[in-house]
Amino acid sequence: MFNEERRFEQPIRWGMVGGGRGSQIGYAHRSAAHRDGLFKLVAGAFDLDADRCREFGVNLGLDADRCYSNYKEFFAAESKRPDGIQAVSVATPNSTHYEICKAALDVGLHIVCEKPLTFTSEEAEELKAIAAEKNCVIGVMYGYSGFPMVHQAREMVERGDLGEIRVVNMQFAHGFHNEEYELNDPGLKWRVSPAASGPTYVLGDIGTHAYYLCEVMTGLEIDRLACMRQSFIASRQPLEDNAHVMMEFKGGAVGTLWASAVNAGSMHEQRIRIVGSKASIEWWDEHPNQLRYEVQGEAPRVLDRGMGYLYQDVEGVAANRIGGGHAEGFFESWANLYHRFALAFDAADRDDQETLNSIWFPGVDAGIEGVRLCEKCVESADQGAAWVAYND
Ligand code: NAD
Image (cartoon, rainbow, N blue to C red; front, side):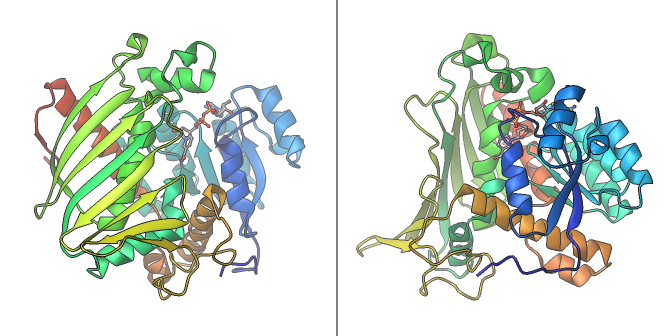
């Protein structure tokens, strides 16, 4: 069971770019980072608007002179201070991730970056190379991967409880953007603009989350894929508000991914079903404390978080903050990830490669993979949903 006992002497001095007042995801970062006392927010460039940034930062308890008007000024000033930040989270629109991460690495900062990490896999690979050179760690905020039952699923696949994996069904298909809400919603407006969002909308915005769950739970690698994408709100073209992807994995398993923002009436519908030769499991992010386990010929079971029959020896499964039966949720999953990011950053700073290698977290490779998925889906869709090789 996690508690907030100190894992190291002082919390990591931490800052944020983006995530300002009114942003969708800024609070989730701050809440998760602060949960176990391993990070302390000391500075930020939270907003495009300098006055609003300062006022917001001061209201968060920061010194006004550590609320900066842009990330360049932020990194330059903090890197000159003896008590300057050691790590930064990047929670800005997608178009800015690459340049902000690159600038952060230049001054030796560890990073937690939002997904999709960059627009192109070349950019993501470049960040990986610079991070390695600078001994910096990059975490990518695939926030659903911190749930204990996701790790139980991973272990069940790994230990053969399902038999040989045959089919993976993934979806993240909500209905919140079934009409042209971007006319009055700046957070949606940038998501449907290629200049700010990148080559995709729903594939990068939510499809990458569902696909990352598949990566975590199964370790399967795509051999080739075919993607059909379209926009039911015409003004969103060339970006898609709905996409279907078929995948063939190396080794013979197959998969599908449905990413959509026009699934009218649906709240989230992020589900993953993994079908093996003996049994299947299914996980749904709206009920993250449960994992459905169906063995062919037996009554279906619902496994619950925090129970003794789970794989207790697995750190991710044991990452509970309260006993079973109490509902843990989104913020706990994020806090579990920030906890690991902190341990990884600390291990890197101590040059403790062994510890660093032993900590599981969504890192730069996960970021690269998400970007590659988007690229390959666009390549396929542009050719009329043709099958395209994944790693050429
Ligand atoms: P948003 O539009 O709601 O908020 C963006 C914030 O960043 C605003 O405060 C804005 O003023 C600020 N900002 C924009 N450009 C900036 C810059 N150059 N410098 C400093 N601040 C800047 O966006 P959002 O929904 O919070 O999304 C931000 C990022 O988080 C996106 O990459 C998105 O894909 C990702 N996201 C991830 C999850 C998740 O579950 N991991 C959920 C939502 C959003």
